[in-house]
Image (cartoon, rainbow over all chains, first blue to last red; front, side, top):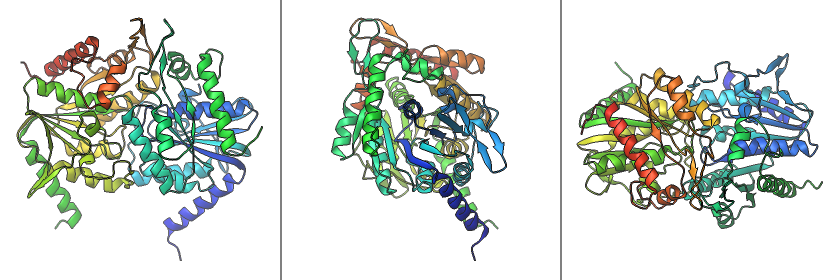
Amino acid sequence: MMNDQAQQYEQQTQKIAERMKRVGHVVLVLSGKGGVGKSTVAANLAYALAERGNRVGLMDADLHGPTIPLLTGVSGEMAGGTPTGLEPVEIGPHLAIMSIGFLTAERDQPTIWRGPLRGNVLRQFLGDVEWGSRDFLVVDLPPGTGDEPLTLAQSLPQADGAIIVTTPQEASLSDCRKAINFAHKVDLPVLGVIENMSGFICPHCGQRTDVFSAGGGERMAREMNVPFLGRVPLAAEIVALSDAGRPLLSEEAPEAVREAWREIVDALMERIGESE
Amino acid sequence: MMNDQAQQYEQQTQKIAERMKRVGHVVLVLSGKGGVGKSTVAANLAYALAERGNRVGLMDADLHGPTIPLLTGVSGEMAGGTPTGLEPVEIGPHLAIMSIGFLTAERDQPTIWRGPLRGNVLRQFLGDVEWGSRDFLVVDLPPGTGDEPLTLAQSLPQADGAIIVTTPQEASLSDCRKAINFAHKVDLPVLGVIENMSGFICPHCGQRTDVFSAGGGERMAREMNVPFLGRVPLAAEIVALSDAGRPLLSEEAPEAVREAWREIVDALMERIGESE
């Protein structure tokens, strides 16, 4: 006979599997370190997929710094409860969002949870959200290769794979290599690398400066034999739109950014075999 | 009678306290999220204090992404062992460095350690390094407000306090507020906030763009009633020097960056009551 804990774990695993049966594709977004724009990539990937007519779920699995509510302009919202789970927050007809930020009222208070507890919270969270029928579920993982990304990757064996976000400088690439090796270790296919903050175009003179260096992500992806999905330039408008909770596909974004996003989504679609 | 684990914990606490008796000031560098330049700040603070004639220790307590070896140009070095502990890597006459990166040979492999184990590794690490007599110990904490920063803050009650690094955009400030509340919760004085990546000056036309917005760190510090130490601009040279393991006080750094650093170190000295 199983003990209570093992039984509860088994039940959760089944619950997650049941929910995921109604989801076409699961894409995990991860990064070797924080601050590379992982959440911005996850949010804008969700926006872009929804804009193409897909029913998309966006899950913010970062317990410590859930930024998805801010980036999508719905911070302050609270998730509704149903008899069987938690109702995600809807943005438009195609996009539903869930974040641990919708469950805690005090947004500036740190949640000081010890590791094993965090794993439990995340698995419960994964099993409890009423996504319904979705073409895509985009999961914004916590940064790094620690407990939480491990728990999440192991709890979602249905996932198509991972998108790994990096910035071009060596300090970030080195952590990105770790994230790729992490994905290999947990048998998670690497759908591709995105190089973020790749070159800054001065809005005053139009000249480009590679603030965080450039091209390193593509080179690294080639060396590690994983696909490269594209690079997104650094722009003040990206930060302003993100802080205001608006998508980067909006017309206020520089054309170079919108173009970069279109190409990345096309490349991703090709990778996961969706031809539209 | 105590059990083995409690006894071991108690012994480690005493060992850490013994080592810290020979250290004048302990400064913890933390951030609410990764990628804001926390390690760059820690490394350059250590360089700056050493340049002023202090004997400085720099401890990299980030198990997942130890970037201090890269930032100080000593990646690939291995720590030496002594009968009583681990020998830090010396850079010049005044600066000694210790990193988990000096203990693991495969630098691109992720260390997938579960939380409680990480806490043990960190405490052992803290008690085992032969710092000798130091005027300052600068500790680069892992980002966020999770297990590891908690373990480290609790294990170093001798610390003068914490420096909290943020970038100016709202997504980072929100996590910075959490880090300040975290410091309050663990009774760690806040020595001050540093706003990093604050404005970019185009090397082509000299015009400034607030890529990640600007001034938010100072405003937030005022609102939360903690000191503000200063802001460091964003510059391609910073990334290049950091990737090459060179200090930002070097002559290759833009004068605005060097000036910013001088003012920050002056402000910090004043806070911890060192008058030079």
